[in-house]
View 1 (cartoon, rainbow, N blue to C red):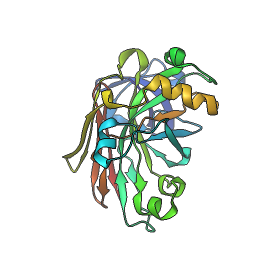
View 2: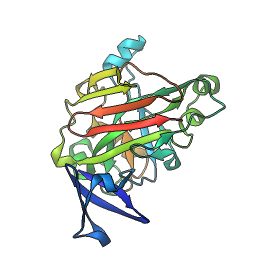
View 3: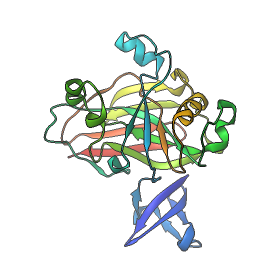
View 4: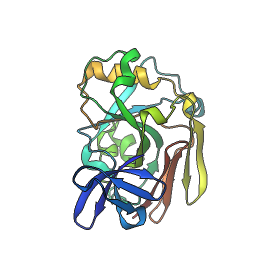
Length: 244
């Protein structure tokens, strides 16, 4: 697992092995206990591309037709927070929802990648929570404002390298205050990850560290101030954030 950390005033990337973190870069050769460190978002994307309605069981839940091609939208990089950092409930919204997702982290700058070559540009996978001001989404008729508040893109805790994670059938779940709300598998994805990379890279250049959030399964629901929300993906780990 790869993560980004802060120790006192210094920030660095490191490899995570259980409770030990082995530093890279300027800190190479040093190791830390995970409890000594602040866990930061594991990537610094130039953009976050999200996919709407991409789980077959979610489409069934909503009684909606499966899209003929991916529906994509974007969240700004300024919306990112890491594991254990706080989701800030915006005062202009009356309904903020969680959406647990699998995210793909891009490892090579690329454009016009065919699906068969998609594995060549994937750095790894992580957990993502597409926080949404649902009332503003409905009011606006489009998604930018509702999806873009600061702290509305929790991601992490770490990146599972592409060689160590199989995205074809991983259990994905979301809990609010430890109550199970979402429980599905990435096997229910409508558009698979290679196709999504092909589709998105035909539109825009993907930079190192960019994130593609692959959509949410059924069970999306509302968050309140004081709630703790956990997105867990088998083979990656658990992303935990509190709403304030």
